Length: 420
Image (cartoon, rainbow, N blue to C red; front, side):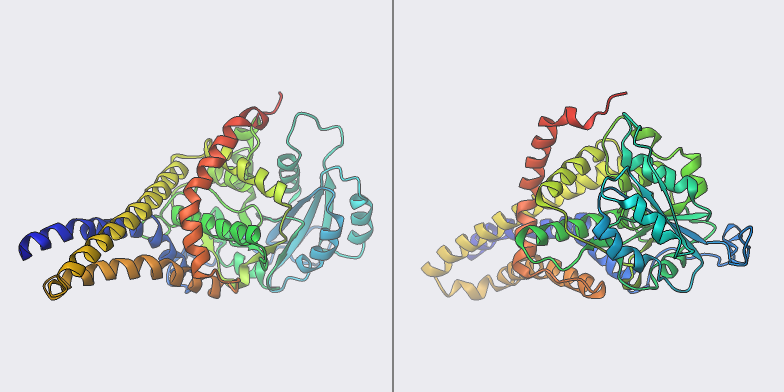
């Protein structure tokens, strides 16, 4: 009888243990890789004598060092944010750089203010998207114009509503500018979330960037993977690679997430580095709720046009979410079985004690591991931590939210196509 009870109690626990292993492979291992990146135990390393990054070269007509990096800031009718954040971009230390602001035909006086402000800042230049530009996504055109105007071999894209966490942002990103690197993925997120919607947006953005880091670093975290996406608020790449790949040429007829589109187009295996240290972080203001919904739909549409690595990442996420639900059902089934068994014969607990230890280990691991791992990551990034309840809630609701976004994307599928 005891043997029969033992045999009946093992299947749910075995299923739970298998789900824990699948969760580790599909999702939790990404958390560990990011923590290692933050601790500097992995990442891209290389020669410091990059030929095309010679900071001792002089710009024509003056005695200042040639810029090693150009910061491109596209903007459209966000003059208050630009006034607030541009000074932080112009106060970077430890590197020769320039800032190019691209005005997307703003109507709030942005162009006039840039003309005035650029006379006081030697590092600041500006250009604009012609108001007559038609049937072309102005944000894509603005980024392209900014890259073309860049005088430096490296370009960093950010946004007008973003500010660097530290004045060493550019210098820290530049530590990864090596001869064998074409792209550097930085970290960006929303600052100080307070409402439920803001916490959700910050969690989703962190989780999305962790997935992108895994693709770039490869399965073993050795930097030999092929990246499929990046955050357009903090993304560095070689100008020559952008020009050679013709930038957004593959996405001219589709509304897209600019960061994912660029990285998917330019990335090759083993030539993408990750820089997610605190000193290289960029904080962004929260957009309006309606804008957030549109951004999610555009990101969902973009994934359909990216490299196979992006689709494999979605499959892993689906496997992780399914494993979480199966794990919950298996542990619940075991709990019901244990309650019925021990209520009828409490003395059997001693016989089945090893099984209960295994079940408890699965439960504690499922509850504690993602919470502890994400808290370590957010603490290292000086970001507001997520509570245990919020982490579990997001994990359980995310597949249903993904399904709702897929339905909404399908309903608005014609809105993502642009006229020729």
